[in-house]
Image 1 (tube, rainbow, N blue to C red):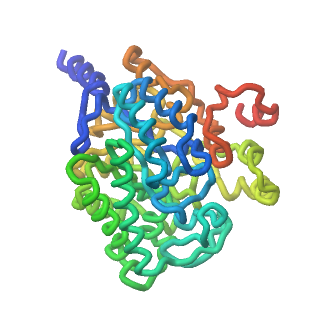
Image 2 (cartoon, rainbow, N blue to C red):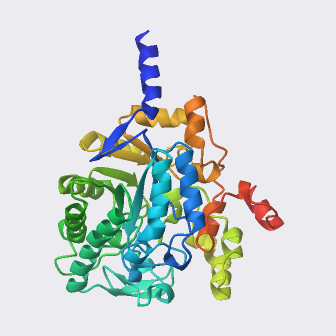
Length: 409
């Protein structure tokens, strides 16, 4: 009898309210900050509006606009969001629509660092250290001390802009091999000053960013941080250092952590799992030489990593055991049963992306079906196309080329 009561309570936890700092969500679900590719001219579009409104109408607790650069020199793509005062009216249209549907709305803020593109960013990519990023490919310049301080302030300014646009929360991107992650990881940080060497030094830029973000957030905005538990390859961050990063973020005042992993420039499929459909990826590319290069070397540059449900759970439990702040689990959630299991382990929230690309109203369906499972098959078509055109599930597309259809089977 007690076991039945416990299971019933655990299953119902998904649709109970819970708080992140000053913000209370109507349930425990968050639309993960997965790149939409819907910001032509680095500004919000009707496509971005329609997608996030559909997810909000579909029952999500909070939806997250993704991949918003805090400065122009942090951009990778012409259809990536650049958070600046000029686009506040377009963003406010989105936040108002999401609120009308009963959901909260967050925006992910970050900087692409050595993954920036000169043609879009307007300057040579910057990072923790100088070098060559063969995955772009591009030369990279290490940041000067004065630039580091100004960049930290840019994160704070982005929070003020987000508030003006009506966002309830910001998500600081400190993972996946972007700029903050490039300072944290010994793989990309080769500096010999106070920003390099020991983990304490490598965390300095992150602490500067968090000081500016928390000051700007004040008492009325929630602050989440996405961080790596592992970089996903030898020579990168591992659990012992990442646990210390998490403790530092907790002490900095962050309201919640999103526990992820992987490096887009070194181990991209460690983030997302499964395989990258190389033909699909190159089909949408415009640059002929890049297309040819990826077709020849893509299998080696983007190795597959097996997919399984809740693939980050084992590592995430290590963080749950030592941290007291709310934690958001992300990674491989496609079914109500597994989501209930994750929440039963003590995670306050669950975050999904591909499931909601496949089925924007998946959360509402889970409310009505205890055995609900979305139809996402993790073929990663949505990821392969989003770097050139907007994200989309292949199951929603008509008249796909036969070669792409065969690749996705």
